[in-house]
Length: 121
Image: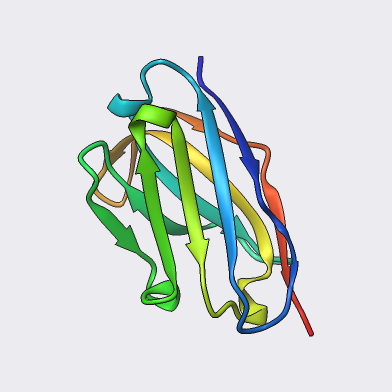
């Protein structure tokens, strides 16, 4: 069983930065592919960024150049650095863990409870 706990959300103004963290409680973190998702008000959950066990990253087009996903296996941490945030980035952000396959997952996927990010002036 893998438990995920997100932190770092809050209220920020457009153009500011925010760093989200996810702390998986598992000894097998280095073997997991990780991702950040978000769900805005009235919207479906969408994939924001992925980082596989080898460190390869992928981003949705709207956050490329602004967001950076990173992981530190020795510390069991997954981060999402969000720069130049926009009102449309407002959402609950979730981290997820499992085995990525193509544009989806195969097998068990673990989810955190989410952390709210609000971008507003």
